Length: 151
Ligand code: HEM
Image (cartoon, rainbow, N blue to C red; front, side):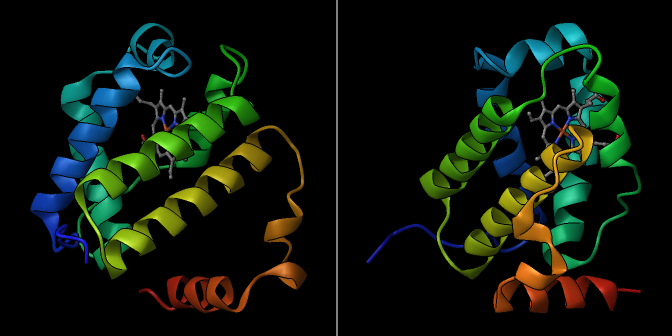
């Protein structure tokens, strides 16, 4: 039995996001994209990401934004390819697994992985057969239907 507990609300999301971006900041493939290319203001980016993940996981929080547009704007400035997205997914899922376990932990990893693959495909204009409506798994279909019903 794992001794880790699940992500229960905003406090765990804030910790997860802080820990994730700590490792992103130190990462050889991703760190410079934030620190040197986008010159990220961490004081505004981190709270934005708390709200983003709170909305994904609990349907609460006040995130409003355009993640696709933000990442598409980075493509002329730096490489946002498979290698970068695979590293992002690896770091995100490893951060979750180090600190949390449970339904929400599994859910946030699935969501993050799907979103990473969708963003990668869209900004690089590479169709991804995994997200063709005809090829969705039952679990993905149910999850996406749930998103569509969110007011
Ligand atoms: C190679 C992978 C990625 C890189 C290098 C990257 C980089 C960035 C950068 C530089 C920003 C702008 C930060 C700033 O304000 O300066 C940003 C914003 C953001 N990223 Fe990513 N990102 C990646 C993947 C992802 C993925 C997979 C997700 C979602 C699961 C995501 C979600 C977001 C969101 C929600 C924002 C805020 C957008 C807004 O302003 O509303 N990112 N990212």
